[in-house]
Structure formats: C-alpha cells, structure tokens
Length: 249
Image (cartoon, rainbow, N blue to C red; front, side):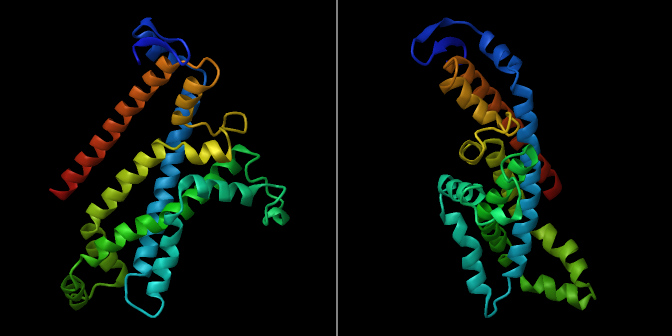
C-alpha cells in the first residue's frame, strides 16, 4: 500500500513509489508533528520515570499504609486510555469543569493542551511503571544494603551507588515502553485536543490518521508515513538496547 496510489474509496490505482514517501515528508504538518511528538516523548518519559521511581521507593517498605498506597497508585492503570481521556476532557471542559474557578484555559493554548495531556498520562501510567520498578526493587538483596550501611554509606550514596545500578534493567524496560508509547500517542490527543489549537498538538500518528481518513483519504501516503514511523521506532529501540547492553557490560 505504501508504494501504491491507494485511495480509501477507489482502492489500488497503481504503483507510484517513492511518491508516497516524498509526499508524506513534504506535508506541511510533518515536521511540526515530528517536533511535537519528540517534545511530548521527552517530557512524558522524564516525568513518568522520576515519579514512578519515587512512588516505588515510597511503597517499597512494608508498613501500615503501603498496601493501601500501592493499590491507590495502581488503580488508574486499570482504566482504559480512551475512558481516562474522556474523564479528563470533562474535567477540563469550561462548561462542567470543577476546576473552572481557577480561570485556566486547560486546552485553549498550545502549552495548556500539552501539559493537560501530560497530567492525564502521568495519572494513568505512573502506577503501572511504579509496579515494574517495585518488582525490580524487591529483587535487590537486603544483604547489599546491609553491606552498604556497614561501610558507612549515607541514604543518598546507597541510592546512587547501590539502588540505581541494580535497578538499571527495570529502568531500561520502563524507558523503552514509555518512549515507544509516547511516540505512538494518538488516543489522548485525538479525544482531548483533536490536534489543536491550530494543529499545535498534532502527533505523527494522528497525522497518519488524518491522511487516511480525512481530506484526501489517501491510504498510500498514510501507509508510507507508517513505514517511516516503524523505521524510527526500530532505530530508537536499537539505540536503547545497545546503550543498556554497553552499560551492563
């Protein structure tokens, strides 16, 4: 399909490579979508990993409230992303928002739309990544921490030189999942912002959707852009895997 002149309604009208690929890259929204997707990926990944690690450390030790907190943090991840997006859309809506008294345009500005979506994603996925990191933390032997204490290590030194290195595999897994999911972001922006305002929050996958099912209904160009996204994902994941392997060695 990516090398054919393929319309949604007319079907395959013949081979036309590499026209679909050049047309997809020359689309006026291509580079803005790439730039926004990269920005969103970096912001979301950093915030999610830092918050998830903090939550995992918070509930790591067994205490009176640890079981309750683990459940409370994990509950949002049981909600579908589309349902969570609709929930936050109602929360941000000027007509029905309980936060309306703040006088903030949550989705009316490019910055507001971005950070409102980031809040949604962090709320939805922080508990999931917390669980992955908690499993990694519980896999670290207590003898290692005891040896660090006997050597006079402070809490910060123990975290930096013991916890983080032994948690590297879990952090790498979370990073790969978060980066991949952010690069393929669609549901949250389609339901919350529709790519607005003024196409400022359109993602690369949303551009694929627009090419295929809106305007020209050009499945050929949409498929070509999908192939480009696949290639980018393969490169990004390969770099992450190789980086992890090198540090482990």
